[in-house]
Image 1 (cartoon, rainbow, N blue to C red):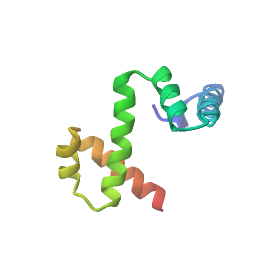
Image 2 (cartoon, one colour):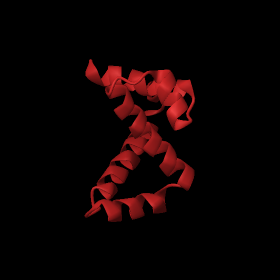
Image 3 (cartoon, rainbow, N blue to C red):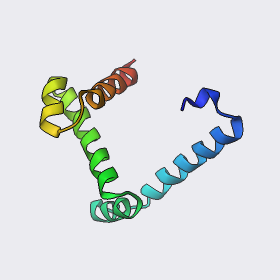
Image 4 (cartoon, helix red, strand yellow):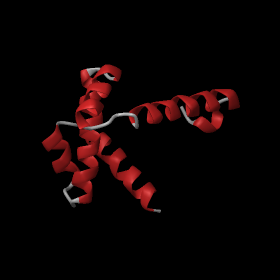
Length: 92
């Protein structure tokens, strides 16, 4: 859902939830405690999905084709394309 069409209080709540998540994650003292924290917050599938999205970004930045990334990671081409668009949006 596009946040431009949400009521202002809902936007504020979502912003606050995201902010609290980021602040919570920043309390991790090392990689092991962060992994443990994420394992408590996310399902195994969610954790794997986020991990794959990071790999998509890294592989795109390395110049690997979208089709090859999709095949290598076992994700849909639309997922890779979304990552590609996000990279382009961040670079403008």
